[in-house]
Image (cartoon, rainbow, N blue to C red; front, side, top):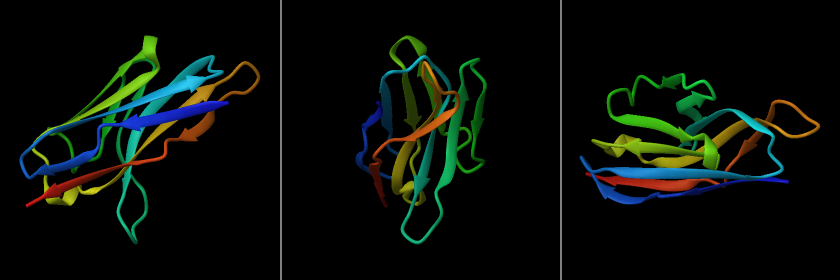
Length: 120
């Protein structure tokens, strides 16, 4: 069994900062990539940022220069530092991991989601 547990969401004023964390646990052999996605009511889930085991990162244009994704491989944890937050960043943020177990490769897991609300 594999679990992704997120933390760090909350309510913040525009211009403020939040840091999200996501820890993966369970029968994990390796994690290929981890990332953050977000979703608002009535819209599709969208990519925010991803990072690979090699350290490559990818960001949505809307968050470039404001958000930073980082990863602690030893702890199987990914972080999302969000600065200069805007009301349009309000969403449920989901952690995602592409990982391998002893018997299976490239399994995809999602966290339960954490609410981020930015007030104007």
